[in-house]
Image (cartoon, rainbow, N blue to C red; front, side):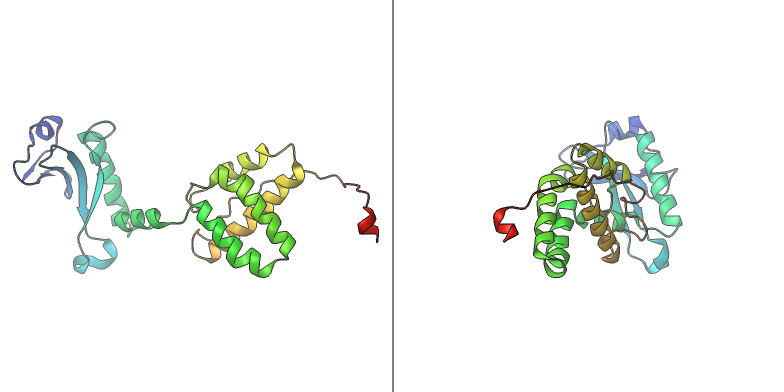
Length: 215
C-alpha cells in the first residue's frame, strides 16, 4: 500500500495475520513495515546504481519506530541513503562488510601470528604480545579495526605517559599493525591512525650486569 508516512499513518498501520508495508508517496523506496507481533520498522528499498536495472533489489532496515526514529528522522535518513546510492554506493553491502570486519582484538591476533611470530625475533614477538594483551586489547579490542581514529590511539598513548618507553613501544606496535591492515585491505590506504602522534622522549637507562651476564 502507498501513502504519506506520518505519525498518524504509522500509528494506524496494523498487520493482521501477515506483515504489511506502507510505502511513502513522497520519497520513493522509503517505507514502514508493520509485523503481526506489533513491531513497526522503517526500511528503504533500492537497486545499487552500478548494476542498473539488472542489479538485485536490496532492502535495508533504518530502525524501529520510536525514538530516535520518527517519520521525519527516518525520511531524512532514507534521503541520505538514496544519495549514497545515486553516487554509486551500496549501503546494504557497506553495512554487511562493516558487520564482518575484524575487531582490534582479531587484528592483533592475526598480526601476532602472521607477522610477529614468523618475521621477528622471539624476544620482540614476546614483548609485542605482552603489549597487546596488557594495553591494546583492553583499551581498543572491541572496536572495529577500520574505525579506530587517531584520537583513540593518542588517548591510549597518553594513558601510558608515566611509562614513556612502554608507551612508545605500544605506539610502534600499533603503527606496524595498522600498516599491515592497509596491506590486507582492512583499512583504506593512508589511513594509519598512528600518523602524527609524537613519541615521548626517552632517557637512556643505565643497568648493571649481573654476574651471569658478565660471565
